[in-house]
Image (cartoon, rainbow, N blue to C red):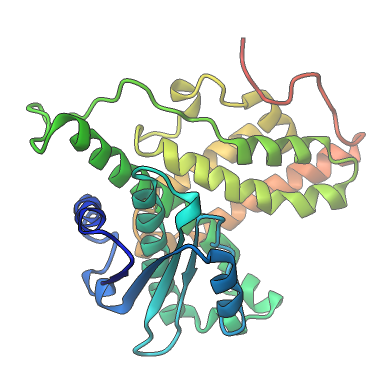
Length: 294
């Protein structure tokens, strides 16, 4: 792996973080095909790359993964130096490496994603793949970042009983809250449909973070602010929990490829929930759309 503009300590920390990625979650050969550049000119360099590589929907203000579809393609990750602090770069880079790994498998099975029409993207389960890889990357990156952070405080030796404990965990998800509020307040079905995939992407990130701390799809047991009521009204709580269960079960690309149709079925159930909701009177707004429970 080629690292540009990283200190020796940052390089060692990233190596340590990747040690917490489990077998089957990332191909060891990927490292030889990736260049990571930490830059102070993030926006300009992203603009330059956009001439040759269209965005895939995995870009953030912190980083820009670039997937090269060539047989011996060399992938890149641009890291925005202005948007990172402390060990946050570990979370970002591990997540992007997981995306690149998953894209290698996906394109081998489904073809060049840069050439997909919208109809081809639907036929090749591209949107279901985006939901899954966001979840998978967040789950693995959260694990790597949390465990490196633990060792930075407690030393190199793991806990004697093998169980890591964390005094405080921040599960707030502004992206999910905003997407859910907008969808909940949508005044017509067309606007609701337009915002559904945004919510799905945010749910994938939220559940990916929770998945490091729990093995079962019981978000309300871990997050007291889990917005059960608003999710029930907007897309159906059972549909949301079904999505979480399916994502938890898909711990590898092969497992995802064996159940993408089940993921699509869950999305279709959400769409049917929305259709029925607007058929009987449209959006139902409430004073509290954050879903915090008393």
